[in-house]
Length: 72
Image (tube, rainbow, N blue to C red; front, side):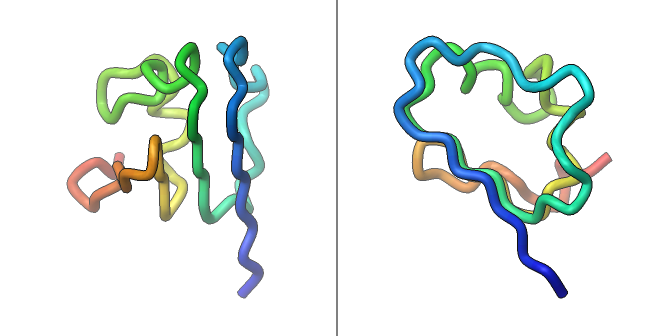
């Protein structure tokens, strides 16, 4: 199985994810020190949560936020 991950660190002005979404092959997403983006990735309520909820491991600010109950 191919393990594909994306790490985004220290992007103070990053606000948006790509309109077409992230690759479906993405297994891990780690976001740190991106204050404009992290609220948009809040589980269940963030405007981008449905775009990333398929990812098996999501970590924001060094805290794992994905749990099976969040899956859609």
